[in-house]
Length: 67
Image (cartoon, rainbow, N blue to C red; front, side, top):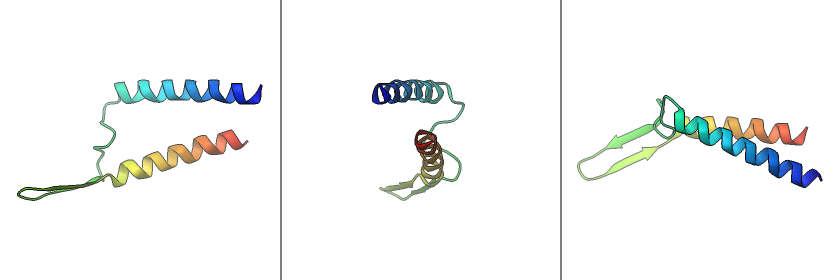
């Protein structure tokens, strides 16, 4: 019963996150703080702010599951 409940909660969380990403006023992956360097023929992109944001969100979600 515990595993089934965890799957249901995870599914609800994924639906909520999907809706938020769809209607967000900003694009995830193109946040201020992400590093983008354009050369003549190349582009280097490092999503620093996006990585930090995802790390914080995942840490909070996993912390809630452990409680």
